[in-house]
Length: 259
Ligand code: ADE
Image (cartoon, rainbow, N blue to C red):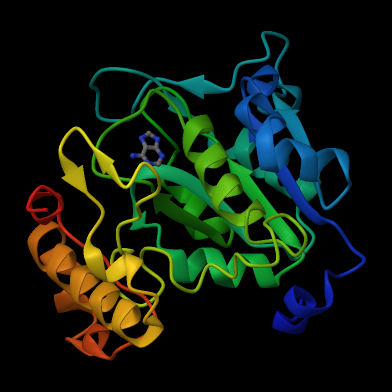
């Protein structure tokens, strides 16, 4: 188990281990091989293993799917093949299956995952998984949004990216992530940089004032305002708790045009 202290001390010795079960192992690491996550992969901060589900097919045609019981379009991944694939990597790490039928993925769940030894991700294709796999194995269905992708691989990459950037040593020391969107039940405050005036729009004066208390209060007010406008569901979910003043805030585009 990783402890939050690892974040302060620069990291646990053990890499965060990701095992992906997929019909398209060549899709990995894909974008995870670039930028922050790619460097962290090369540095051994995390490891990635992609295994082909087809390797666990038992028949000579190597079939992994079959027609849906009750009729209908598409094909369904067989539970016996999925179970054999899962059992080959199961070692106590959380097992997640990206699917639009899953519970929405949250930053809070990502934070929990990062404290563990790693994660196992089962990627579906076609019409999805035989439902019995969720009863027979401790497999958590998770959705990355209310839209349908052609498979779970991009969902798995999203989950891994969200985890890896939080691993000790991946982001700069300054980036604890505590002021980011969702961490306080709010969207993050908006950012500005030079030039001070661009296309007639000037950076809000308060951000140039040097008054850190005023800046923090302004950012918090903007975070609340933007969250109310763009994501009222977040405010409701946190029961208004997000009004408590943290040290950051956010603003609106319309306001940015005022000065
Ligand atoms: N697979 C297909 N669509 C998905 C979604 N919205 N979230 C997670 N996995 C998926």
